[in-house]
Image 1 (cartoon, helix red, strand yellow):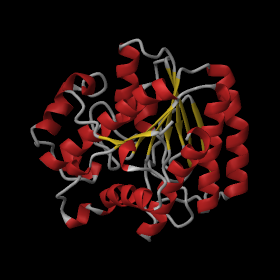
Image 2 (image 1 turned 90 degrees about the horizontal axis):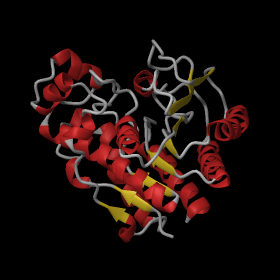
Image 3 (image 1 turned 45 degrees about the vertical axis):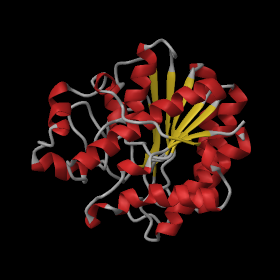
Length: 301
């Protein structure tokens, strides 16, 4: 089976130069994956734009109208860190569609990949931290509404807590939120996930992987989830400008293998989205994101 990967370059540009750094990695990762023959062109699929009805399953009508009409107040734009322009709105909608379509592929084939997404900082009434729309929350709510799943598990391994998801699903027993993140990282005010594991600054491969390997089986056995959403941020790297953990590329790859192997062992489909990555060298970001696809291919390819 070839893993289906959802991605659309046409919604990414043009962006002002000062906003391109967190966006350029997507196209560069796609190109590197193809160059290294990790994936092939026929695995890539265009997800389109998420529909408004799905957005409104999570986000308030007032917030969405401001986003859509490009009338977000300047303070809200600053909080997101990306411009409120037509290209940015379409990119956000495309990213959400990618996670939803990858989730559908996962339910059919066991795994699906979004070469974008992981915008876990978006709340119902606001965005922040490069997150305008919350792709994981919208996809989960849509699948729950349609009866395709009854229980979802979010495995959020970005260096930043998945505060938006924690807030959105705080009173929803159908979605279990697990976030293992840097204790001293953004956001300063953490929400309460169903399970938070805040790690001290400087945590390295051995400690990180031991904690994760002990935690995942307990969650899978307890929850009996129908689908896993894996937020595979690579800002856990020691080279990351914004992260305070100290994983190596090899440790980050082993993290991804551990998640995919656990999903396969328990027979739970997994949809993956990319999450954060802000290393000084773009090559380090791209390599680490490519490794997520390497790990998925090793387990499911």
